[in-house]
Image (tube, rainbow, N blue to C red; front, top):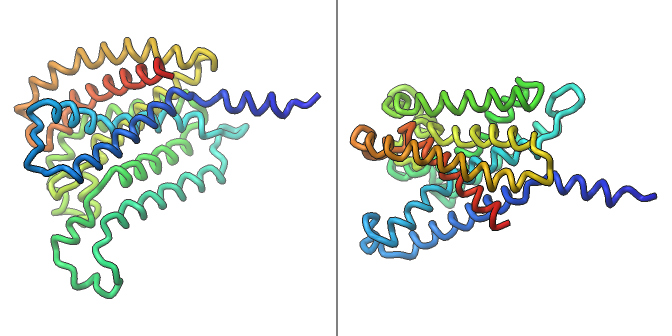
Length: 288
């Protein structure tokens, strides 16, 4: 009897297709967000009126969705050996992906066509070059997750450690982002810890989303394969509603404290996004 097709079916069924669908939707939102922003006259964009409020809301949710879903998916993508270790080949692939993301992220803002012209570029060009985008943050997050795999022996340890790291990042983000890091480290590093020089994303708090996703993936992995989509649809909705309902009034109340880009550092804002992402995953599961 040929078991090859049966084994292939079991392997494919271990994927959570509703998570893949959620990540696909996030990529679509990212594409439309960049496209509309690029082709629209900036003078016509008013974030205080509809439909720009709606558009800006989903644009801001794209990165948290992508990071959380990616964290959850990696629980199923990374297979430990019999000793609970991540195989060196897998570790190498993850680090290779991190390096590729870093390179692509910086090439998108490469300031010169010819190498010998680099030294003649004005300062503002280099400031733009060192701004951190989502590719950089995803690379850092993936790198840290791979390191965390090396320090844990099973998914339970990984889930507890990931959730703990996410909570710590969420908690200390306001303190970290208030520091003028360029006084202590190179601008290229400071931009990973600050919004002061034009970065749209920062390790604090965005890396926390990936680690929240890892914790979600660990929980989801304990659910029988045929029930995972229904689990996400039901409990993702309930948890998302509960977290978002609790965090939204706190976030609004703290807006005067976390003004400007600092609103991203608000723990209430981060947890509000976590709740909204869970709702987003629930809706994606329902659609699937």
